[in-house]
Amino acid sequence: MPEKETLERAREDEREGKSPSTQAGEFVREEMHHIREGKHGASSTKQAIAIGLSKARRAGVKLEAPKAGKTSAETRKKAQHDIRKGQTSRNRRPSAKRSRATSGALKREGRSAASKHNLAKQARSAARVRGPRARQKAAMKAVQTKGKAGLKRAARKAAHTRSTHRRAA
Image 1 (cartoon, rainbow, N blue to C red):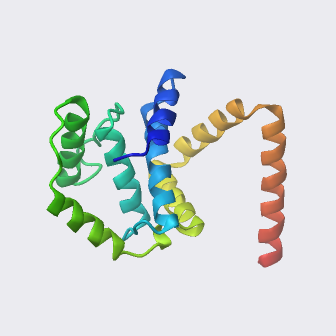
Image 2: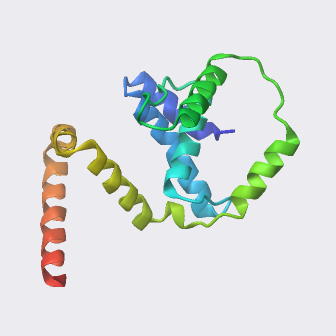
């Protein structure tokens, strides 16, 4: 069950007209916090993100299931099931035995899935899959939403990153 603050933040994003993926990001963020706090672990960063997206769909975020060919049929089926769960209001009590088994299995997993290094690695690999045009488009959008001060800060950070990488090479 997502925390109250996460649900509120996601609803606020919806009110502000932000995309479903931005709303779902709040749930993914919560999941990363849980792993960092030691509440449970995850076998990979991808799994941690998937758990967050599943929670978002079940909470009623209008996030579509991945298109055929993008992921396995099993993943699509699970996403569609989560979407249906998020649209119905029938509150059946979850199976205690299944909940215990799931949380027990996650507790045995490692905590490095939410590390900055692994998150950055996942973001880079996801961006590579999307291609250079999508990366360019995302960068241009970021420039428009940052504002002048944010843009200056980002440029300074990029220059610093470049200089440290030059020194390391």
